[in-house]
Image 1 (cartoon, one colour):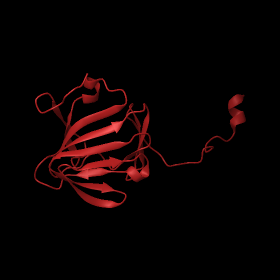
Image 2 (image 1 turned 90 degrees about the horizontal axis):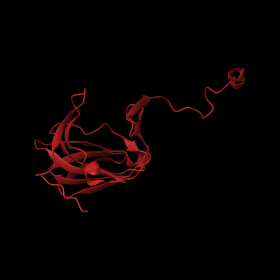
Image 3 (image 1 turned 120 degrees about the vertical axis):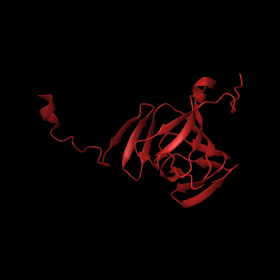
Image 4 (image 1 turned 90 degrees about the vertical axis):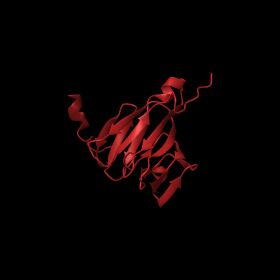
Length: 159
């Protein structure tokens, strides 16, 4: 059964991080309300002078932004570009798909955030070196190491 979402039936809740530069409003559980099994989607409203999520990319998800109203600056590995109402941006999985928005205007920027959901996703944050395991939202900060790092003296563990 088709589900239609619009201003009359979408509720927005504010999301304020402990870092004041990150602030937005997001619709609540649209994908869940629609019964979606393989897509996650929300309508977001990025406040003026604020950033979206920290600069990141997904290892197991592709993502699309559709700018519904307003403007924002997009940061990617290629640099910066202004997005405007009507723009659709595809982010591939992996480092080439890294992205972040900044609302450089005085008006909110509203956009559809749509991504694939294959179960487990690893999100990496190049600026901070963190990883996030979704959907559990377990965030870790660690350096990349060799597969066998820390595995020496294995025989001692078998005693």
